[in-house]
Length: 485
Image: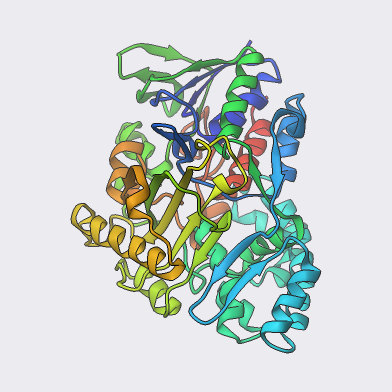
């Protein structure tokens, strides 16, 4: 029986483990933390429970496929709640509460500006065509520039318009800035701004508007917990609190791993689910690397980071499940972000799952999650001093904007800065969305699922093809499952 070692119990590692055990392999997952999930694990502060990272669940078809291939039913394994409205988007002069029903969104856009509903419908139809073209490309490994000559890639080229930015693509439908921002803020899922993200990614808001968004009872972290449970049910071996020191390599072949304890574990195949650039810098002897040597990694482009604020409140609030507050000058905010600068005029995201999920806090209490996009550690900000300015600014804005009192109701809180992401969670530069998703770092130019520099080493997660975000991370594991036989 082939023995496979997986480094990291993030969504990618757990998905890979679940799929590979269902094929009968002897699979061992080694995770440095005491619980599964990586940067998408559950965070518990006293009686309050939070998702540490991702909170948007879309395109559940991929996750359904994972569970089905492993012999399980997603909807019998977890309690998924479809959201309506999808989210509330707050601009200085207007608020949009967008729906899971495109017909309702047509009415919302038309009410905002006559003719905009029609442009929204044109955009929807264009994204439907785009998704059909791009799906086959995202579902297969992309290991060579010659694959650009593959029929599905050639057929998709015109529809994808890869050399246009997401912002420019949307302006082809309507030049209204607010309209563009309502359908491009999703570039944050890639850690990019709409001015730099390729227009390929306009299918992301389409997935939300056409297929909907979901909450998992207990938080999205429960997907990880359930996968870990089923992985072990499939006779997989989960080793928590077991940090990996390095990958064993001889003659450019991965032979296993060495734990921090000094224990050596041999394996036929090694799967890497740790943050890609961190792993290349820390887990592999530099003599084995050329293309992804730390010197080369330093020249790569990375996503922005986030400052996270988790508040356990002895009060409930009427915030939406997902609520995004746009700064007065959102364009300047994004430009500052791209130039590794923080802004005085902040944009931020509120997640208020306690409104529909009573498992996260006691009755009459709420677990509030706040995300502020900030530069990664390539910027010159000292987040140990800057974090309190950002914290005070956001809390003040919430209290003023919503006419609520937050501070006096805080029972517990936690702040995570880009430095914390790097130091505590081993995220290179604190770039939580991984390598950036420009055309120069996508498809064949992204680290390959079957790592090109070392034999018997495979990649899964946001640092490989197809890219960052939960659906594409799950897809990377489906690709991996086809590669390991």
